[in-house]
Amino acid sequence: MMATFNFNVGVLGHVDSGKTSLSKALSTVESTASFDKNPQSRERGITLDLGFSSFSVDIPEHLRAAAPTCQRLQYTLVDCPGHASLIRTIIGGAQIIDLMILVVDISKGVQTQTAECLVIGEITCDHMIVVLNKVDLVPQEKREAQVEKMKKRMHKTLESTKFKGCPICAVAAKPGGSEGNGSESFVLTELISILSDNTYLPKRESSGPFIFSVDHCFSIRGQGTVMTGTTLSGSVVINDTIEIPSMKVTKKVKSIQMFKKPVDSIIQGDRAGICVTQFDPKHLERGLVCTPGALPTIYGGIISVEKIGYYKGLVNSKAKFHITSGHETVMGKVSFFGLYEKDSAGNNYEFDFDKDYVYQEELFRKSSSGEGEDPHPVKQFAVIEYERPVTCPERCLVIGSKLDTDIHANMCRLAFHGRLLVGFQDSQYQQAVLPKVRVYKTKVREGLVERCNDEYTVIGKNLFKKETNIQNFAGMKVALSSGEQGVIEGGFGQSGKVKIRIPDGVKPDIYQRYSGGSKKKAPKAEDTPSDHQPIKISLTFKRYMYDPERKMKQT
Ligand SMILES: Nc1nc2c(ncn2[C@@H]2O[C@H](COP(=O)(O)OP(=O)(O)OP(=O)(O)O)[C@@H](O)[C@H]2O)c(=O)[nH]1
Picture 1 (cartoon, rainbow, N blue to C red):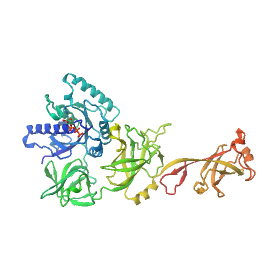
Picture 2 (picture 1 turned 180 degrees about the horizontal axis):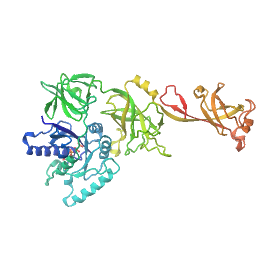
Picture 3 (picture 1 turned 135 degrees about the horizontal axis):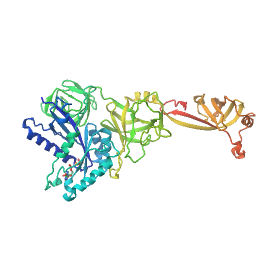
């Protein structure tokens, strides 16, 4: 059989920018072209419902050496919906693509969902082509100038993104629009050649668990049920057992088809139909299937996290977000924390249970270098607690958004993104793991010196409440506003007072003022001369967020 390499191209953009028209035009144009060249080898791609269409070409010259066994290159176009309400589907679609085509209506420029698609592209994809569509609507005499103006504008928008300098091309996917009565004809040659130049051979691994994203499921009489989709990782062979985790059932793979031809196995990146028996297609519309046990169901987890620059609002700890983990979206609560020390390994996203992290009331816009006086953490993480368990791959992409924002508000709804680093596989596991997550808040307590017991001991008040277990603070250092350093020895009496040892001794004038038995109380601020202010005791310590005993530690 002729070997074919499958390259997945996402077609994203604002509603009505012309994504479907473009996908259709591309599929038709190219398959006709290859038909013309070689009728026998014409491989019109599977046109699979829900915006999956494809076309194939002879493998381009620049890829031949790298893929000597492949003669054909199949482009699978993933036509993502544009409507704001379908953003979950767009995020799912964007995770299976190798390159993104961002479709922009030339007369409208960057619109709200164009920006959201750009954000999703930045998170999920490394390669992009911008297509300025509907050039037929610009009068011919103004066209060149308008295209140039728009290209410049787009390049400026992309300047601060990872797609800086990406190819931009103007087309009319459907001249004349729905009426289809455009008098001019347009060819997509430029776009096709840009696409070919930007096609690369993504690394496809057959190792690791088999995970397959199903986008369509239907039954074929006499055969069984076919699930079509894209292989996200690993490989599968006929007769292997696969699991449908959402239903907790396993099935044997009866047959596999790629490009309408039977194959024995598929690997990462392949688009295929997998046939199983005795399975009602109504039970699975979309979702993941996998090697049994490969997709854990988790109750929460620890993620690396970065704030999305376009998001205007605050991203606060304890707030609820729609959290997309892999291909599933549920509500969840997030608590952010940062690491301030630099990691010699540079920018890795590992979470280390042995490190101390600082709790953050809000997520910072950008992890900074951590140099000098910079108050920002070097890396940011979050603990997520889902409202209901989710099934998702290890290290999957996580996106937090506010999907209840009014879609007409012209605001980016995507707030943060990251990767799942640790999954809490059941609620017991969560309860066992959370206390090991060393996230602290710095707390400062202040009290007053009540009196000196002797030259080396002072009694403090107002530092703790009556009910505080002062023993938890024993051994911690305190500072007196008169300059002495002390160590908490323990409680004194029942009213929350504390005994503090001053190893270097209390200054003589202070001792004189504060000694003289318990009846001699500290002077009150109002009747004391300014140099006789009450002496403050301050205690700075770390309080660990997830420690059930709320253990304290000195900073
Ligand atoms: N004049 C003109 N109209 C176009 C062109 N491309 C698409 N249209 C029209 O624009 C409208 C939207 O096109 P679609 O291809 O459905 O847009 P879409 O982006 O796929 O839409 P959603 O998937 O709903 O977001 C239709 O009425 C098309 O006929 C073009 O090149 N020129």
